[in-house]
Image 1 (cartoon, rainbow, N blue to C red):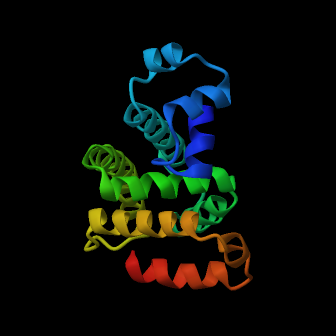
Image 2: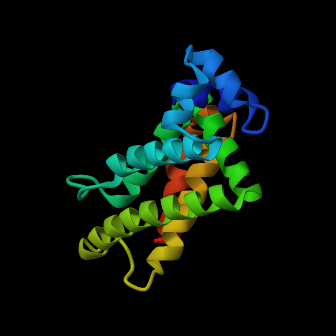
Length: 177
């Protein structure tokens, strides 16, 4: 899977062949096809891995930190992710626009992540950090769009470290939440 991630992030989904993945990780085609019968099954495993990473960040109540401070810190940490990993996320999102099978995989991932964000929003509402009138599903999807935008922006490391970033994002989040 690591070889597939590297190949997909460097060359794109369509330019990467299963043969190339085999060469990259020194596996026989039979071994690769035994575990991953298609590129779509590889991409599904990669999506599931990314989903697990996102849920680790989101699961559990936010003890000792406001929802807004948590979201500011989380968006800043996204810009620090490995550039190959970020390129892979963008590649998979683009493939989801073309490939209905990948689109369905992403839809499931987004629904699971949004549900976890909504749980954090429920906590925030209980702590009076978020208006009760906010449509939590729409707010969760807006925040996910922001997160994916940061991951896809090659210059995000620069602007999320700018001294005005926390205050600017705080103003936006206060408006949304």
